[in-house]
Length: 470
Image 1 (tube, one colour):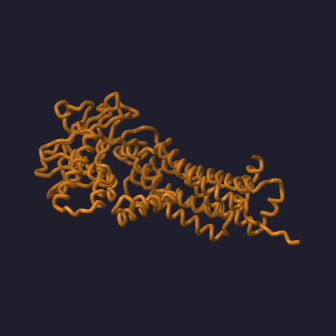
Image 2 (cartoon, helix red, strand yellow; image 1 turned 90 degrees about the horizontal axis):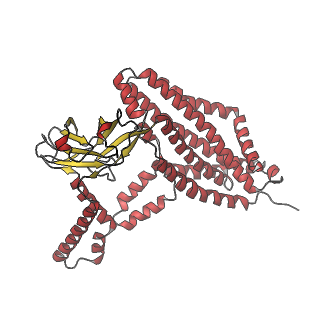
Image 3 (tube, rainbow, N blue to C red; image 1 turned 180 degrees about the vertical axis):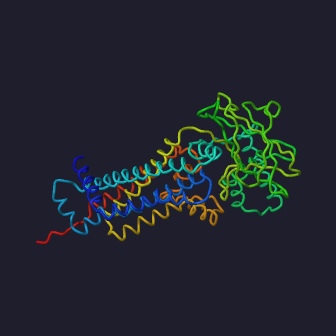
């Protein structure tokens, strides 16, 4: 372990001795934090919006900058030593190639820890300064504390009185009826078409259609949603937010809806609670707060929507689709402090930087510097756009379940950075779940990173560094 630590310490010292690189890092990170904050200070806009914009852009830009820095330094750490033949002075000493290899990775990991710790501290301190200087009114401060500088957990509801098993059974019955009708009308219908109708994708589509019907309120009707497991940090004085997006059929001329909401700890809210009325545009995300004491001690909350005053319009709270990822309705409550949530975001970013360091050291141990840069940058860019690529391939090719599976298998080879990106949660004041961080650690670092490190170690171990000429 002493040799590994010596290699790691030597890499950090050599990197920090490059004054031009250190100055460049300080200037870029300063522009991304302090410079960007000064620009926001001079711009127009509301204070809480400035803080939200600063957190979103500074975290995202800083991660991308540190990612490029990690890629270049990690690849150069071995490839430069091999090209300049400095590796000869190391391998002749009582140290194995494995110790050199893992020492380089440890050095990159510690260097990233230092840089990310410095950057995260600067971003947090600057955000707090903006919060104190830019927020002018009590309304802005309340929005900042409850919607941005917080950590809210999301709870999605079930429809009261509707069982998922009943929906699935009904979906299977309707599929079988469609098949029987099709065979009666078209006796020569092939077996492939029938099996496609019975496929898992077809069943899931039918279940989604029936579920959306249960999540709708007809004219002069109502629908009740049941939220479970809501545990606000302050149940007495705190608030729970209901976020919703409404689809309609047919579309009202005003393009907006009059909404009547009833909420309480029991299912009979229509007869026991006073309504809350608001109005909002259709197909747009809205939020409104309700008192925390409306949630039962066991964490149950019932929310009923009554469709009055909207004419013949049916209101639907749909499930997410490929094109629209927003849930029709969900509840959000404060689960922990902003500081702990910000730390979780930095931890998620650090895991992804570790993965890039693994790739870089693995590539630098066998490939030349330009080729290694090209390879890792390609993987990095594909990782950033992995979700878009999966959706695009599914959109074009997923006419069958097999084609959808093929596209997912192909993208499994690349890191899915978008799936584990904590920035959207931070800018919306939503909690970065430890479960997501754990999945990122397992799939990206242990499995994919482990494969890359093992393959790179084997290639470096058996690589011919020089020939003995007699």
